[in-house]
Length: 258
Length: 258
Image (cartoon, rainbow over all chains, first blue to last red; front, side, top):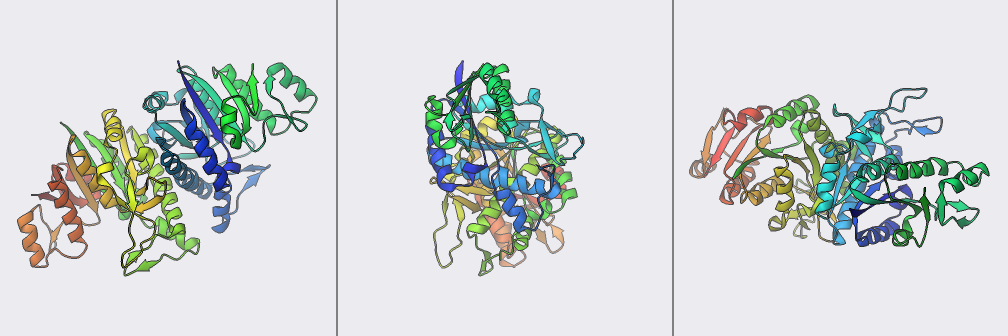
C-alpha cells in the first residue's frame, strides 16, 4: 500500500496570502501522494456584504440560500480553488482543482429540513465517493485540490462542510492507501492549558473531556478524527498550517491515536 | 483514430437557463469523445456592476484589471463551469470542470503591452497544451468542460479568449483524434443575406469577403476556423447552439472546408 497524505486547511490560512503561499510551498514538498481540501475564509462573507446580501444565521449557524450558494460556488470552487492550483503548479507540483460535482466525485444529498432549514447545504454520501477517479489522479502524481461544493444526482449544487469532505475522503481512500490525515486549524494542536498535547488517545480524550479541558468546537473535530481512525485512516494529526512539514514528521501538533 | 467533438459555446446561450439546459441535453447525446469550452456571458458584467466596479474598455476592448480578473475567475471557473458540470452529470454524462491552470492544461503568457495594455489577459501557448491529460480523461469517457481562465508558469491567473482556447485544443488534439470542431454562436451559421451558407471553402470565403457579404466579427471567427483546418482539425462547423445535434450531422449551420 502506498502512502497518501490528506490535508485540510481552513479559512484562517486562506485569508492570509503570505501564509497561504508559505503553506503551499510546504504542501508541494510532501513526497507522498497528496490531496488538499480547503474551506472558505472570509472572502465569501466579504463579497456578500459588498453585494448587500445579508448572511443569514439561525441559532448561530449559517443558512445557504440561493444567492449564498452562488457566492460560495464562485468563491470556493472558482477564485480560491484556482488560485491555489495556479500557485501549486508554479511550485512544480501537478495539481488539479475540483469540487464534488466533477466526475461525480463527492455525491451529496440536500440536508433535510429539521428544526432548522439550512438551505442549499449538502451531506456527503460517503459510500458513493468516486475513489476510482481519485486513484487514477494519485497514481499519475496529480494532487487533487478540493473545494467544498458538492451536488445531488439531479444536478443541484450544494454548499458542504470542508471538514466532513476531508474526513470522508480520508476514510474512503483508507482501503487503498495508508492515509495520514492532517487537520490544520488556527491553534498549534489540542491544548491542555497553553501546552500542546503531543499524543492523544481515546482514553485520555474521555478524561480531558470530563475535566472540561477539551471542550466546545474542539469536540466535533476530535470526534471526527477518532471516527476517521475507526474507519481505516492510519494517522490523524491536528495542528497549525504554518507547521505543515513538522506535522508530517510528528514534530508539531497533536497526534490522535486509538 | 477515434472521433473527438469539441464544442464552443458563448455567452448568449449561457445567459438563458432554459436554452442552456436544452443544449446540455443535446451535448450529452453526442456519442464520440467530447470537450465543451464555454465563454462568459453577462454574469461577470452584472456582478461587476453590482459591486460598483466599472468595466474598463479601451478602443472597444475590455481591460482585465486585478478586480476584473477575480470576477472572471469566480464566474467562469466557479459558477458557470460547475453549474454546467452538475447539469451534465445529472444527464448521465461524466463531465469534469477544468480551467487552463489545472494540471497546467493550457499554459499561457500575459499579453505584452502594445498600444493598449489589456491587463491580466492570457495568450495561449499552444505547443504546451497538456494533451496527455486530456487523452487520459477522454479515454475514460470523461468529458472536460473548460472555462476560459489560464495561467502563467509563475502562477498568475489570466483571463483568456474562449474561442482561442477551443481552436487551440482542437488543433493540439488533431494529432490524436479525428476532431470535429463545432463553433456555436448566436446566428444560424455564416449568412449570405438571410440564407445560411451550407458549405464554405477558402475560395468562396475570399470571394464573399471581397464582396463584403462576410464582414466584421465573422472574419476572425472564420480565419480561426480555416486555421484550425490547416492545423489538422478534420471538420469545422459554425452554427447555433440550439441546433447542436443537427450541427453534428451537418443538417444545420455552415460547414467549413479547405
